[in-house]
Length: 614
Image (cartoon, rainbow, N blue to C red; front, side, top):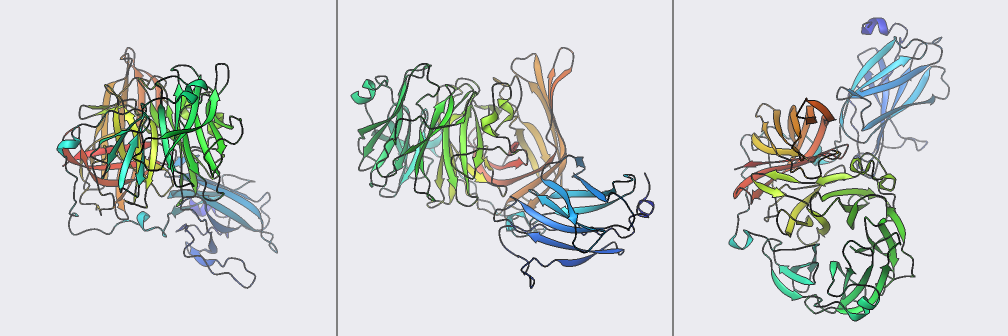
């Protein structure tokens, strides 16, 4: 390879102003317009031999799509112009950035304008080469980061570790109540949280930690529901909202297990503590019909005023049906729009995050008895399409590839002897108006079925992550600095695509987060079936950002599934790259100790989490 001087002899005046590019977003620090209303760009010197201009095209959403414009000048007579390629963090074909060379700038025979579109930050190497002779090129490094959002800024070096407050265990919280298909709402009148579940039971809590019985909201299946095709003594998976008439509306299903002979019905009550009274039938399904009328989730679209219900299961997938916003009743007999089909999915739950302007579709993948796992996709429009972090449309998933679709937020794992298994039929509580928090709610079935509540955090990318611990009242707003973090963490990836991970309870590695800014760890453990084993190894660096955010740059992150008999590598995943997450003082019920936890996610939607006992 020729050196820079030789490579540059035919690129005498290359103008690529990306030596130190900062991508702005969130609508702040917008460059002023010039007289023509166009953006004004700053002139920057590149290595002293050329000048260039850098400008920002702002996005309303953090990391969603920030654009940097640059100019390229090359010597006259170089036919075919130039082309641009890039690598990110040393890897080719990386996600998170795209470089496009546009048309020649008006009035010039040699100047081109190009655009770098970044959807994440990192270290990029931009390569500009002559089309006529690709061996003639210049490389300029670019550091792309978001300076506008304080949670992405590197922390200053602290003089001492922050004083952290950890939640404590309570006698009432040593074991969670049994639950199946739970959903939680907050009632302003009583200032209490209420949990509704399959079977018609109801519980209440003042703090989302300690729960007590609150009677049955629906003690029997209404005769009208049975007559419509529901099963007697079957009241499944309720979702409860406050209707426009001021009443509480409970949507629930009545079905015969392993069939799609099912009914979704609506019952209402004046007060959340009352017995609910049958109101109407919403949708019914029968054998040989594609949908399954179970697992309703109902939300108002505040932008349009419309009311929507998602529902469904592996019988035909997930459907979206419009309801009457004034009464909560069905609008017509249509099943609605099919959002996801052809895969083993049920328990859909839909929620809107105003901060990021996305609708999030949470789903329970797999078999509720062994390998339930929670996945999410998102859309700007409640009607879809719902895409995962890699931009894959959930509507395109089928049984041959479904495990590669959706952001897997958690699956089966075993940490400190406590098995989290088949956590599913999830729901989400947006409690930001009350506590400032988001919660993810599910049932967990290591033996029996019990209520599993976790705090959920939205990262700057707009994707959620879960705390690896059950909720114990932790304060996720505490400042955590780089002197708090060093130590050994029980850590694991939520492996997304394995062909045989149906029954595997993934074991954590001992991840050492060093005071010198490095991290490393490894683990080998049996898969299920035990003819296979997982071999996981991680190396990299870390840095604290913002108040309590952690960035991990994994130079090595190998996840291998190996046939033990001969060492054949059956599956080989490379999770190297940047993970961004949150550090939270928490409580580990499995070890009965306080724990500093981290929950992180990368651009591909791979989740990484860990616990350090205190």
